[in-house]
Length: 193
View 1 (cartoon, rainbow, N blue to C red):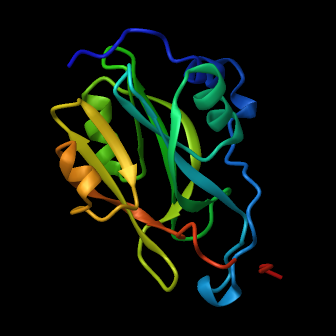
View 2 (cartoon, rainbow, N blue to C red):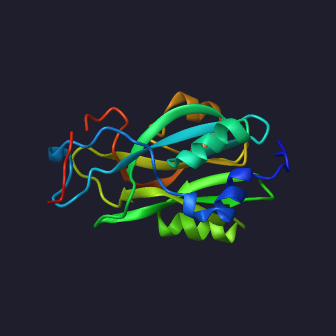
């Protein structure tokens, strides 16, 4: 299937107004017992969107990205994937959004291997969606990167690799990008002080 060639305005907005690109959903705070020592509970919800014409999954944790997906570009929300940190903490890495204009494909990744793979394939970094942990600990789940050769689409999700929705569209696991809080986590105030 060939993807349409319409321009991604969200990415255009991110370039023109970079000060507006931040991970900024308000969500309940995280339970102190669920966090390693010295971590902030400042979280945003990472949401997954789908565009039927572009044949593209788009994951974002920013208010601007979520609004653009729904109101500007006609994506539909698939699901809330996870909760990510809004700011960098010890043992975290940036969860970055990449875009390939030719393929009309978004990819949201955190590992250096995924970044190098995307850069080699002509993707460009467009925004930081939040921060995720490099290693698992109590209360986190894996954030996976999948790819469908048939659809020419990357998808970042907390769905298990054998999930029927992924298998039906021939998505295969590329790697674990890091570890995130599940959307269903109960999360009360916690502070580093």
